[in-house]
Image (tube, rainbow, N blue to C red; front, side, top):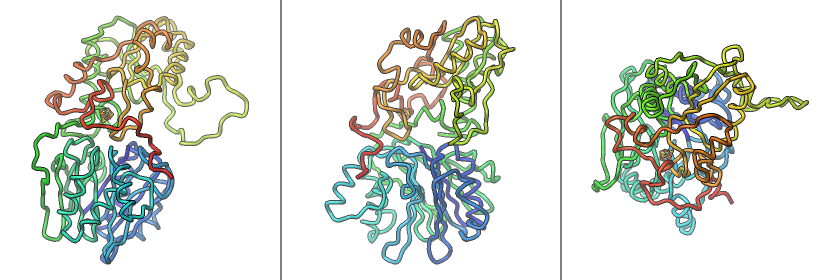
Length: 458
Ligand code: SF4
């Protein structure tokens, strides 16, 4: 998963992009980059690491200009190495281009193989580079025509920002898998994966970039194109953005994430009304559904485990073996609150189950009398090919085991998953416009089950 942010005609663009990326950091922590048009060419800086680690004041000063794009990366195709950090920048026919992509293409490998046979030379192992090659290949026909031709060929999830000298373009796949929003700031434009980035810089949300839309912003103004004449694309917004991925203070697909998560909690209570001493989330992912469950049930909401927010991506392991260190360093139970109590614990999802098992064990060791564990999404049984980094089906606990088997494995009194109906009810009018493939295996696009994240690596 990744986050993208673009800006048009706003002074100190690189600083605003920095703040935008800072707000989108949850969408990718492996690498970050910014590319800015300085009046003559595109200058860029990118590296592995968090936004605050990659960019310092002096670097942002070097990236002067009013138009630019940025990217935070979590790899779903191509390894987490420096050459795969975006924006991906090229010089071509005395023009400079930069591209930032969120999503995952399902046919990048096939297209790349064909292009390589034609003589194209690739610099990275990202699926995103294929998009740039296809655009450049048709550029002499005009920018919109070139992007349209690329969109006809690629399949999968793509929310893209393209900088072509002083023109900023946003385009989005016709299924609408990943979010992308347009805003205004100081007379200029901003585009972001999520609207939480607008709030930080006091930009105003205007509208979403629509599925299948190409939005061009240049000296003549703002122009919208819809290259697909077909209407057979089934809208397939990623429902997992609501369940886990997006920030709760964002609007995605025109809906607030916090309120949807609370609805998930209400619906959990409707489907599984339990009596207990308290409701508690596994923070932060379970917080908002737990609020919903507690409000619907009238039971007290408590924060029975405390999260350490200061865990870096790498920390020094203790030299002597401390039991369950890796679990306790992140989430630590409040023993005095939990001891002797019957607790309802809410979390967003269960993937492999091993980390969760250790967390639940620590609640038991803190003295909980009974543990009821409720999940605000249905069992994840199938991998995602559209940009969420779930493991293969064989590693997904729910693809191989029944709910009762998982309950026994977790060693708890109750395990309940929200139903697909409960999930759909929580997103209201979007219920016919979402992807549910990781739950029901019905992929909106034909996928290649042999896909691996490192498929393009040589
Ligand atoms: S398969 Fe699941 S995670 Fe992937 S796009 Fe669909 S809903 Fe989202």
